[in-house]
Image (cartoon, rainbow, N blue to C red; front, side):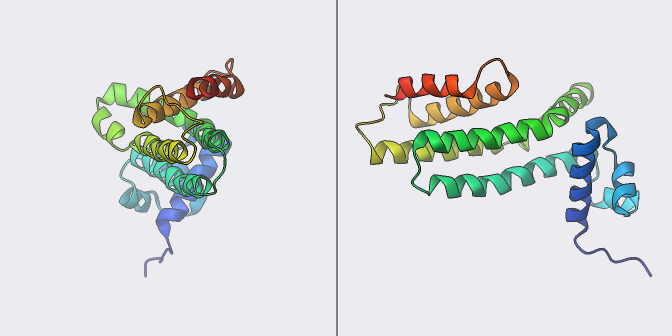
Length: 187
């Protein structure tokens, strides 16, 4: 009789995350995951036909969890710059956790020419910008005398997300310096 596995997707992802964190992207393989979690390699392929699909799911799970955190912070009534700093912490953690994944998937995309699906599944930056846009609109409505946006809230939200992502990769430019520039721009 075949072994019944309770919530195999969660088990596979949990072990993949552990391998990724402890050994890095290069060590992450379906075989390594199978060995780590005690699930047959073929069974893992039933849930995730490719390593890429597994990684995309891991990143999507990260963002779904953190979108809930961002929603909670934005509803707390906290200061705009406090909220943006918390969002930056989420982006920075993502960049740290998945830096090697991005590089590896990008290299694989260039060699296999399968970029369309890769980009389609990465709409979380767009969703993040949409959440920031809502926060910006709310702040401007609550404190109209305090915030004067030089761009539309949508454009400003994308500007914020893109710059926060860049700061994660450019360690010679601090978040506090960027925050000071943003404060001057919005006042």
